[in-house]
Length: 462
Figure 1 (cartoon, rainbow, N blue to C red):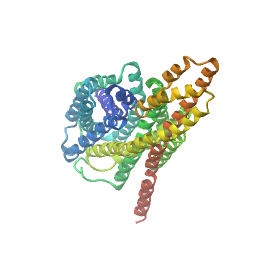
Figure 2: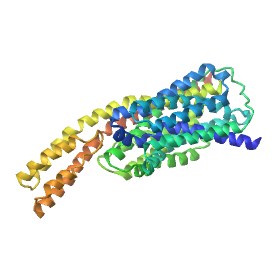
Figure 3: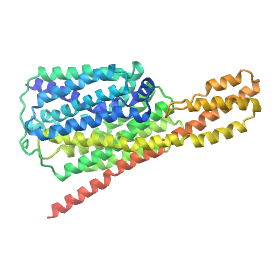
Figure 4: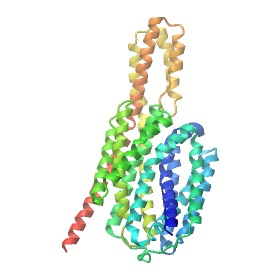
């Protein structure tokens, strides 16, 4: 029986990690999806958005039936939906079909996540440990997703991210079906609609924190790959700072009060986002350090807030569903607010870049004929560049260098480097405001925690 319980818990952890990682695993593949499916950044965000919105719907649908939910069957059904939709997402050829399959993935994810907590907590002696396990698995899954997705994209392609999830889901189904462990409902299963104020506060905190975290998981990845032209596997190495520091911080924070961990984590996430917004050009080391700080905040705050949200009365499935909806609602909120801001900033970027670039061309020690021949090609290079990427001026400068003297070729090379720097700074600057907005989302967790502590203090004096 002990061995069976271990295998059952392995399967449940695998399912939880898979569903939470899927919200972020596709992030490093988004630039390739933009290129291969010929869509804009605004459209490709729906690859993330659709999954999270559908996951909220799937989780919310569980709540009215939480006390009567057949958890084992629901977990298998959710994993099956998730796995089959993963195959569909991996073989589709249009953004509309991809988004549709992402919706089905999200519905399956909401069902399996809601069903997973009751199975983990069915051993009443270990409910606190089970809640902590669920919370930690959720945090690490979210943090590991981008690096794992980037590695798979580099080695194979973006489709492989989805196709690779299907056998993982199938393995979890096999383990769940192969292991027969009696399910014992916890004593508060009948009070599915009750909630403590701390649970409400924690879920609201998860919403705000997730809205901030998605700016790190989405915007910084776009910055690394589209703006700075890092390969997916190099960007994955940079983003690995997130899960590494998250795991270290989670372990270091064990034993501290949940409110302390949540507050400190929110501060670190905000600090990392504000720090990342300070970059003006390609500064990979600085961004890696900021991601490490964000990861540490994630490792402290997400498990703490999730644990607070899952504690208390009500059916375990209902508590899990509400927490899942709160977290993924934050991701959707962040994308809805930050994407328009980011796209607007990108549209504004050409104005200062063109002005500075024109001044650099006029100041270059080149004959007027060469300068005049450069302008149309450079403008065409800039105009034809996909949204969020840096233009490639190499062909235009190579053409101008054909008939240039040695001195003129040196001047052209210097001008080429200067123009690349001007454009890089202009595009990088477009990330500043949305990253700071993400930092404000994370900071907004602190007043919530403060109000809750005030209410607790007042209640204890009565």
